[in-house]
Structure formats: structure tokens, C-alpha cells
Image 1 (cartoon, rainbow, N blue to C red):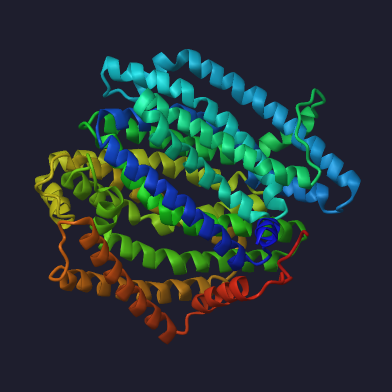
Image 2: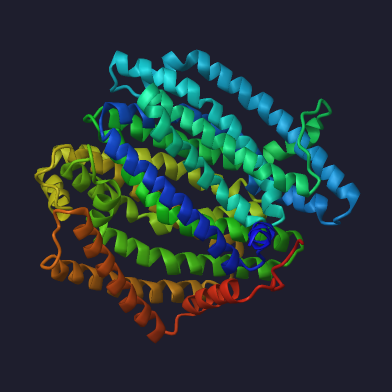
Amino acid sequence: MVSKLFYFFKKESNRITEAAFLIGVFALLSQVLGLLRDRMLAHVVGPGTTLDIYYAGFRIPDIIYNSISTLFSITVLLPFFIHLIEDKNDDSISRAGKLLNQLLTVFVVGVGSLCLLAFILMPWLSHYVAPGFSAAERSQLVILSRLLLLSPILLGVSNLFGTITQIYKRFVVYALTPVVYNIGIIFGIFFLLPYFGVVGLGIGVIIGAFLQVALQVPVLASKRFFPRFTFRIDFKEMKRIIFLSLPRTLGLSLSSITLSIIIAIATTLHEGAVSIFNFSFNLQSVPITIIGLSYSVAVFPMLSFSYAQGNIVLFKKQLVDACRQVIFWSLPVMFLFIVLRAQIVRVILGSGKFSWNDTRLTAAALALFTLSVLAQSLTGLLVRGYYAAGKTWRPLLVNLAFTALEVFTSLGCLYLFHHSDYFRYFIEDLLRVADVPGTDVLMLALGYSIGTIANYYALWFLFKHDFLKDGEAKPFRRTLFQSFCGAFFMGFTAYEFLGILSNYFDLDTVWGILMQGVIAGIAGIIVGVCVLVLLKNEELKDVYNALHRRIFKNKIIITEDQHLS
């Protein structure tokens, strides 16, 4: 039993669908823990001042992480290391190890210096992070944010180590890193929050970030990578890597700053608005992580290798196939999330200090966020396609324009909501929250979705122009049509079953709501799968084959997609 478990952790995955499925399973586990984390926060703390401070405390550390740590991100470093170790001899491993040591040294010194500066300036920065907070609330925010400044360092080192983990396709270990991160936070909620308050939550975050680093060290050691600090820095090589990373870093920095601005706007609304925004944002991130991120992580090493070998045909096929799988999974999830939004929120968060009004407001925000789930997932894939091709500046142009658009659309929706009774009544009636106070926070979710959807369409237009010829996107459109049909009937069936089942379950209890949502969802899925079978959907066959290989076959299947062993 122990040997089989050890083999499972060492096993490599060489097919896109199989690897994505494996990553998706562990991403699901991570998201389950993340939802448990949010449920505990909702139950113990509830939307309000304390939780608003907790979520606002991440803004400056997140900006630093996305501004500096991502200069040495997996998506940029992977092609460098693939090129260095493709000969698989001792000399190539040694050169790759030296590069890793240089990157580690430059990163820790650089991000550490910036975190120290932010530590000093935090009282001043807090006014911009949370302009709606009182002086006492900002004082707590400063303490928490200073503690969380350790997280960009630890998460950045984990990200750097993850490059080696992904090169050798140890996707199980890589996929477990967010799992242990959430375990650390849950530990903080259980054991530290009662004694240290909101600071205890921050300590849990740091514990989780440390566990991410520790989990990957054995993989590096098994491949003869022993990371250490060095004074022998090849600044010319560092400059080349940073130059290639800069577009992605600028894009992520702008996204983080944009999200921080939206949250800053939320602090000026009503107490608990930041919490409602973050709870719904975290829920909509579940399908994006499980589906979009899983396929992006699985396909990126293969894309990088295909493009490096000059096999552009295989490069395009891999990317289009991954996009088709993302569409296949994302559309049904979107329909089910919108239809079952109240059941999802009530079951996951609805206990303790999380009231029924909190549930309705979070569910409405979740529905608006869910509109952009497919767009966000596909955007991640297209961006990785550009990075694999070494064209890192291309997507930056789109991101610069459309992440800024998210702020303007959020402000525009908020202005329209406050100044147009017709628009406000339409939104509140559509989402069934007309009698709930604080509905203006929904406009931040709507504006965010509008901006991200526009971002995807602009990036897709550019990608087709750069890579795809006439007719090469046809399978993409076929999958879109078939998946939409399956998702539509899935959502319609689930909605009808909700009405029927409301006569048989006590909806004043969690179990009643859970059973109503589960049965309605299963009924919808059965109908949706039947529609896909009738349409002879290829993605459904791929999923079946991937499950069959993973569950019923013990040997590794070598395919044309394999590039390292």
C-alpha cells in the first residue's frame, strides 16, 4: 500500500486530458478545503468589520507578489529549464541548478527589500487600500498586512521550485501545494483565531505558504537540484529572463491593482461589502481553478516543448484541444452555478453569523461573477500559448487596456445603479434581492465580469490573427455549440427540479437545501450528458478515455505529447 502511494506521487502524466484531470482532482480537493475555510470564516466571524480587515490585509502583499514574484514565474522559466536539461546529462543538470540558485538569490533579495519598504510605509498605504475604514480599523489592517508581507517571499520561492516540479511532470506534488496552503489557513482559524484574533488568521496564511515550499523540496532533491544562495550572478541572463517576464508581471500587477481598487471601492459602501465581494469571488474561482487552471498547467509544458521543437502544427492542436475541453466543462458549470446559486451559497456558507440576507446577496454576486467564468479560463490558456511561443509582450497590450476597463465598468455600473431606478429595480428583481439592503455591491461583480469578458474577446481576436489559419478554429466553434446545448438543457432541467423538489424538502434546514440542490443538479447533469451523447460530442469521449486510462491501467502510456522522462 505504501509503495503504491509512493509510486502515485512519483508518477508522471503525459497526456493533456489525463494530466489536467489529475490536477483537477487535487484542485477540487484544494477548493473543498478553501470552501471549508470560507465556511468557517462565515460561521465564526461573519461578514463585517473583522472579515473586511482580513480580506483587505492581502491587498499590498498580493500586489508585491504579482509585481515582483512573477518575474520568475513558471510560465516564463519553464522554456529556459527545458532547453537546459533536454540533454539529460550531468552537465545540463548542473547548469540548470546554477540558474535555479541565481534566480533564488535575486528573487529573495529583491522581493525581501520591497517587503521591507512596504513594512515601513504600511500606515500610509493603508489609507489607499481601505479609504472607507476608520482609524481603529486601519490600525488593525496595518498589523495584519505587515505580517502577511512574508507570504510573497514564501509563495514566490514555491513558484520557483514549481518550475522543476512541472518540468518532470510531478503534477501530483504541484497540485498539492494549494491544498497544504489551505490547511495552514484552516489551522489558523481553528487554533489561532480564538487567541490572536485577525492576526491569528494571518499566521495561518504564513504557515500554509511555508508548507508549499517544504512540499516541493523532496522533488528537487530527487532530481539533484539543491537550491542555495550564491554570489555568482549572471546579470546578463537575469536581465534576459526579467525582460521576458516583464509583460506577464505587468499584466498580473495591473490585475492585482485593479482588484485592489475595486475592493477599496467596496470599503466605501457598507459594512460587510468587502466580505460579500470576496466570498462570491472565491466561489466563482472554484470552477476557474479546477477547470481553467488545471488545463493551463497541464498543457503549458507540452506547448513550450512543441514550439521549441518547431512543431507548430502540434502546438496549435494542443492549444485548441485544451480550449475545447475548457469549454466542455465550463459552460455546464456556469449554468448550474447560476441556477443553483442560492443552494450553493447557503450550504457552503450559510451558518452561524452568516445570515439569510448575506446568503441572498452573495448568491446574486456569484451569479454575476459566473458570467465570466468561461472567459477567465480561456484567457489563461491563450496567455500561456503566447508565453510558450515566447511572445510575452503580445497579451500585455490587451491586458493593459481591459483590466483598467474593469474599474471603469464597475464604477459605471455603480453610478448607473445609484442614479437609475429602472436599472436598479431590474437588477434587484432579476436576482431576487429587491428587499435586501446593500445591493450596490453587486455592481462591482457585474463590472468585473464585463471587463474580463471584453478582455477575452480581444485576446482571442489577436490570437487567431497570430496563430490560426482559416478553418483551424472550426472544432472550437463546434464544441462551443454542443456544450452550450448540453449546458442549456442541464440548467433548464435543474431549474424545473428545484421547483418540484421544494414541495418535498424542508428548505429551512441545510440538509433540505442540500438535497434539493444535489438532486436537481444530478437530474440536470443526466439530461445534459444525454444531449451531448446525441450530438456525438468528442470531448465527452476524451473524458471517458482519460478516466479509463487513469483508473483501470497501471502502466504509463507514452504518446507523441511526451517530452521528458
